[in-house]
Image 1 (cartoon, helix red, strand yellow):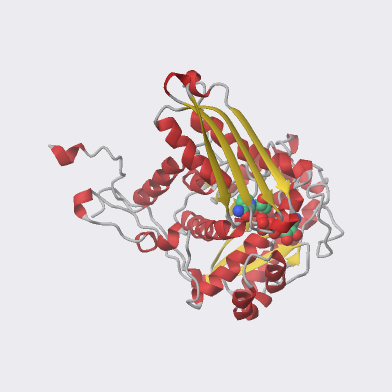
Image 2: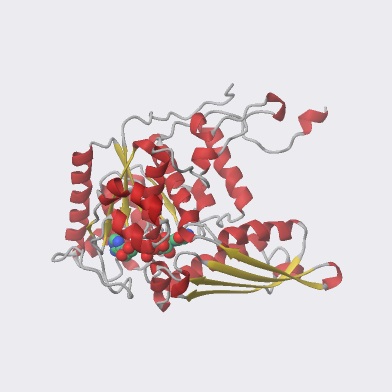
Length: 439
Ligand SMILES: NC(=O)c1ccc[n+]([C@@H]2O[C@H](COP(=O)([O-])OP(=O)(O)OC[C@H]3O[C@@H](n4cnc5c(N)ncnc54)[C@H](O)[C@@H]3O)[C@@H](O)[C@H]2O)c1
């Protein structure tokens, strides 16, 4: 029985629209997965909302419902997807090109996938240097582009009759930028849209349009979008949740599993070299130094925050952390992540750990997209606005309040997420103290 007041959560009635800028490998794997799940020919492996449980109360109570029965989430079959891309391929053609899923499966899903055609993208070559595509909005200021995206959203809602919507960025990684003067306030940003300020990126135009249209926004890539005052002000004004950034799917996920373990045993780390070989379109975009810089910054921060060199100078003060991404077309989406970790133990004696993760990027990312869509929609119905730190679990560089550091340890992130769900439903938070069992 709940022991606290629960949060008022509006029911998940009607269809949920999922608006996705970027219809490449991750998006098409996500959409194909939804269709496969609907038809009972695939399982949502990797999705906490679909397969996870949550313990409630004391261990003696034996209460561990499925998360999807504990909080009112939209169902995968209630999702209706639409997207934008600079290429004209429909979701079936894009999935074939992405080469993640095998043809026999894609053939079975051809009809629903082929029905999803990308809307014309807001695109700026200065932000993604390696791609050139014809399906883009032309003629107008950045303000006009934002209006066009809002119109796309309105048309989509009219066409499909969805009750609510969420936008999630699965487009390419944009070139690294820091917040600029135009990002200081919403008024500055709106003035910048009018004046075509070069510091306003396409992803920020989509995010602005989404928030203006009452739609929460998640950023799956490492570049700067809503993590600046102007769009956070808009999210607060509109009572909308936002989260990001950069899906924590492969190598960084491994890093945030291993590093907390080494730290828990007070084992030192002198160096951590991470390299990736990947050959998909994402790899091609990241081959550009500007886009790589966005990824490098997002991939680099986790270790520093987990190891806390300032608190443990003997163990982690001088960790040499190096991250590399190598574009190697023969691999396609089947990425290989190599980690060499130089550690030291008792009396400083050195040891090494090698991790070779032969992963599939989009297979790992698709369930994260599903969970984020469902949880952001839940947050919106629960009246939660601004940065959703409880969704840090899903991100390499989690957004956070300015006065706190981001939490990267995947186990703390999961505890934070589950405690947030308990809090929403008025259940006791779980502290793992457990003294009461031994009175
Ligand atoms: N495991 C993962 O796959 C993973 C993990 C973390 C982050 N990401 C990020 O997710 C994003 C998508 O990854 P992917 O493998 O699907 O890449 P992808 O290259 O296959 O797909 C990205 C698509 O976005 C399109 N695009 C680029 N700019 C656009 C714009 N302004 N508007 C609309 N469409 C635009 C491209 O044409 C492309 O089709 C990338 O930014 C990637 O870094 C992926």
